[in-house]
Image 1 (tube, rainbow, N blue to C red):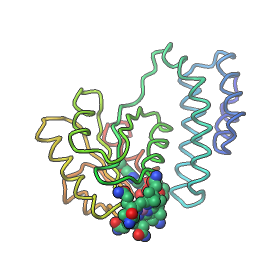
Image 2 (image 1 turned 90 degrees about the horizontal axis):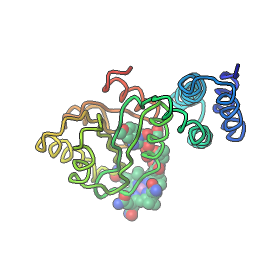
Image 3 (image 1 turned 90 degrees about the vertical axis):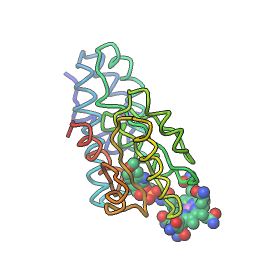
Length: 210
Ligand code: B1M
């Protein structure tokens, strides 16, 4: 039987090669792909997220763990498809119009992916129209927006208005250094998260998977 605890520990250390090897071994041992995902990879990323929230680890450690997660996922993905394991939900994520900062957004992407969610990353400097377009096919359950400039925060309100005007039924979450819970309340966002790890908890709550 595969040692999923060892897989989890390797992911926390950001040891990509071991994560890849142990993922391959677990598949070869016949361990269900859902268990490899949930008890190995996601469990590891969850701990990294908690440590990041508690300031016990920092951005570089998260990036290295996310790289290890990606290595494991590349091996595991075909098995998940074969087993019919679906992501918890699909999230559209982008940095709002006028804003080119993407380091935080990319971290949010990694943590959401590490949390078992599928992320459609629409990039930076994304207009309200593009957010609406990406969300309107009904696959996305959440529209997630990042802004790093006080001058681009109002674009989040425009996106929420455009989603409503277009009759697009998605939950919204906002974040980024200048963004606050009170701003989220003011513009009618469904959720706010101060950091990438909290974004996973908030998104899971929004889609009813917490
Ligand atoms: Co810019 N920049 N920048 N910048 N930049 C800031 C944000 C600034 C605070 C620097 C300063 O003046 N002290 C300032 C904003 C001031 C303000 O508006 N109050 C600023 C400025 C003014 C500018 C320019 C206007 C500078 C100029 O050209 N005059 C310009 C704007 C360009 C544009 O966007 N149109 C500009 C440009 C740039 C670079 C291109 C050089 C570069 C960006 C590179 C890139 O992203 N690819 C850059 C950088 C790197 C920064 C700083 C130094 C670092 C930002 C960062 O990546 N932090 C920043 C100063 C600082 O923060 N010390 C600064 C690390 C990242 C992990 O944190 O993005 O906050 P953060 O993400 C966190 C949380 O906020 C949260 O999770 C992440 C991890 O926990 N989070 C979410 C983020 N998005 C979320 C979404 C969620 C939930 C949580 O839900 C959806």
